[in-house]
Image 1: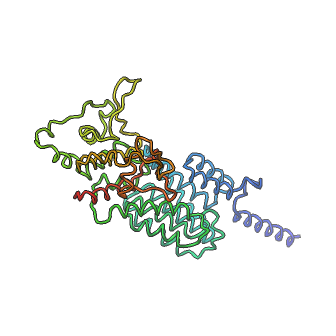
Image 2: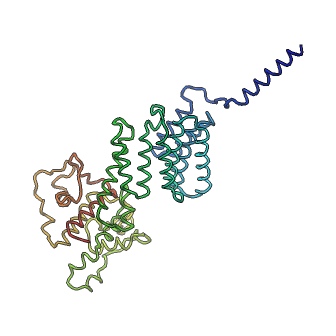
Image 3: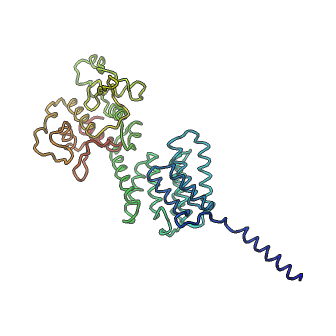
Length: 401
């Protein structure tokens, strides 16, 4: 009897110990309601810049399994991206981000989990940019690439080149353009079926333009910041042209008496320029009556508006560059040199359009580029890389240094 009692106690003790060491019970049992599904959906929502929805998905993944490392990694990235866009209260939120990163590494059960955690860390540093963040991101990249992973088990990154792509993004954010271009190039020279080829190709084209634009030149701080912009505003563009082309000096030499240039003023001062950081540059462009930078009369407010925060379109940029070219060379015939064409070489710019001549002037001089299809994309916004490249080529054509 005593032996039976001892055996029962021993069995009960082993049972308690076994349950004590076991992982918590998984709370979500539905086939689609599982941590991996919610993690993958969250990462896709991050790609679509739907940060709040992504955060909710990572929360659900961790509700299903509170030791799911990728869920913590995803939550860390989402938190960092949100802080970068709304920095208010960043300190408290960033503490949570780093805590999630810590848990991502703590609960990693495989080399693939560790890989995802290191890439998440890279992405967090890139978004938050704490002190000495780039060397930290580089360390994370090296650690990620040291992991001997089964690429088929990298459920989101789908290959080691995912880390290379995000290291390229880090260099681009650090304004370290040549290493960024190299990283994107490495992605493109790898697997032909990689999910990162499309994003890497777009980033490579952007950084390649920037590297070409900066080659052999020294742009000011305005130029470096504009380089990474997906779209350049009218205010930004005015600042770029005034700084890099030295508009006042460039045009003043065309006026015989210097005091006349000093006294020149724009016809009106648009109210929407009051308080703008680019008011001086915008007024300079208006003073010289550069096409593409004229203020527009707003019938509702019954006043003129410069619209410094609106995106500069490619056709407006072409008009501005053509006008500067005419003013500098004094060759008025440039304004009509391509009129009368029966057929336009551009499928999206008719020969009868008001900006056709300007587009022809900038493209035939290789100042602005078309798509491989021949489209000029007149209504698209000018991105920073093409703006810098156009300014560099323009300076070369006119020998402006």
